[in-house]
Image 1 (tube, rainbow, N blue to C red):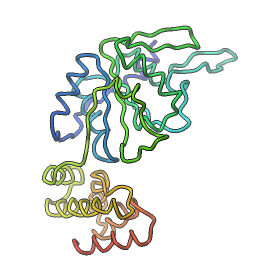
Image 2 (image 1 turned 90 degrees about the vertical axis):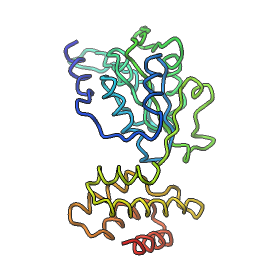
Image 3 (image 1 turned 45 degrees about the vertical axis):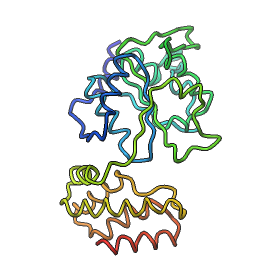
Image 4 (image 1 turned 90 degrees about the horizontal axis):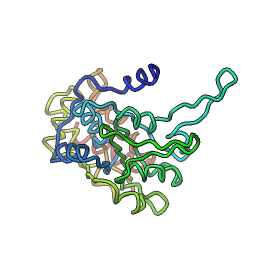
Length: 270
């Protein structure tokens, strides 16, 4: 048991993460937590979903166990497995089981990337049962009131093969995230990128221009995260245009024509 407590303690967020609310998302998430309801965050890459979960965990004073989902994520990766140690089979909890036992928040980032047979395991946790079956141990865990399940995905990348089934998504309270309105995004980039207000404003303007290219072959425009990364490069003495090229343009596409268009945008602003 001491080992488990140490592991979960590592997931406590002790300092308040910077998060600028854009609506009622904090109040809704807290109400969902109080009522034992799971949370679904949907929105584009780099718009603040993960930072929101960090802030929520800090507000609720609960450990945050984050799992980045991918194609090879198995049920055993989430729930746990037997490992051979000193010639004996020893059970090791996966991150989901660890979060349930500890009454933590388990955040499954980009849930649609996980295999369908893996996501089914969260169904009994995400409804009134709030249970996690551990078939390999013949154990049925009932989640304590402090436990919360949260998942996220990017609707912009969903397809017929990668979408949440109705049987999954209708178990959740859903929050839609998007890029903040201009003044709030400027404030975020200013604070997180440690930039002067005018430079942050021009970066946000650049982001708006790139987001308008979505119908011209660009999968997604510049995220708030990319703007912050560009700001940090600028703060290290990298020339603005070079920083924008490295942190924004090259991160968005490999297409030479699109890169040329993005470079022209940068040149028109800086």
